[in-house]
Image (cartoon, rainbow, N blue to C red; front, side, top):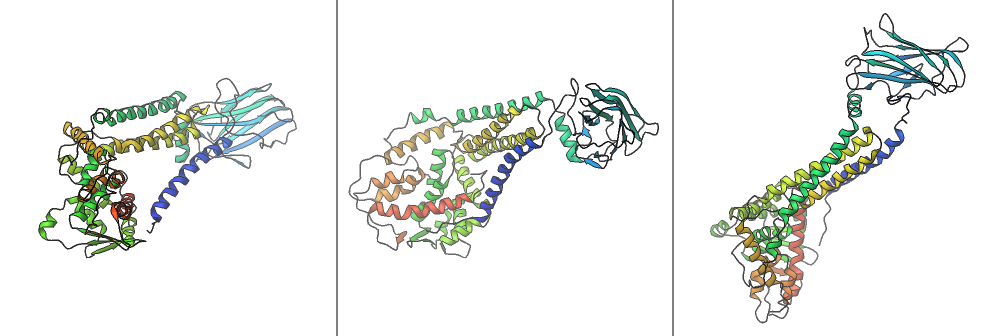
Length: 506
């Protein structure tokens, strides 16, 4: 049998994996890149740049002079050297802060720093500051009369001294890039706010999981299951039975439907050894009217309008034509709708699953975004990163468990008990003797209930007649060989189509 590879799906998941990997790799690089914090004075802000390349431009022996140019986009140059950090966004103002000297190699009686502004300004948000410590003394920091310069000076700057200058500008004076504004906004968020979100969001996810497990429980139902149900509890399509018992629709529903359609005269299946062929049989109007909407749509998915024969390659092409097939999604929804119309569910399972899946996806991406954002802009220590990773993991769990959550009505819970009792009967170890007609009659249900192997084993000693709707290139003797020949084909078709269904419906 040919195994198909779907390039679009492969690319989609490869890109997703690369994105996640790069995010975690980038976080480690960010740690190396971030500047080391230092306290110039009690409560000082982050240091913006290193003074190691601030060469003295003074021509007077024993004095220090440096000229800095600020630009409208918030960038800056110290002498001829461009400084990457520049102006930072703060809460209510924009701040310029820069270390001029830090343990200089010589003694300066005076240090003068002139900051050239990009445009005139009448007043700053606060008076400019020059912070001189470890022997140095600040002398003055003032805005020039024309508003085009800030002039700083300090005296007695020695080898152990540190000199830092700061200026505080009103919002709007600089036209900062969006990225810098966003970065500054995150940096102004207090540490306790980060912590609240890092704790609250995983807590909400845990609460959602608790609710899901509560709704998922069928312990009282399973305790009432017996093996006394020797006939199907109701005349229902096998796919609908699968939806009722398992609370979701999956490949088994498609497998069971294919077998049911063959038994009812809509298709024939031929096993060619290395692949297969499915034949669409001509049907009259009366037989066609018995098709349920999802069954008709399944035939339309396998066969083109003018097509009467579909082989392995045709099935693979139908599945790989779109990244996600809406038609398969509608088939699944049709099975859910039919089961719901019979009163088995208080809420359409597809909608219930979708709500939890969306919640899980939101939690996953919130955790991912929170992890990256906190790694870049969050305060030290970075221990809250583990909480963001926990949110990512919880989101994945919610998405994974969503299809197993089902709200049954009283009728639905009774139906689950009855069908599980019938399932227990099909799984019994005792073998049937004589004719194997009952095997073919209940084969679709055994597939829908996931017990086709046990059901086939019960007829290993029975007289078997190959159904008219199935043929193979090799001779088939007995129920066991028939099951080994047929079921891999229906399983392959079902899983191939299931891969192309929309994940949110699945």
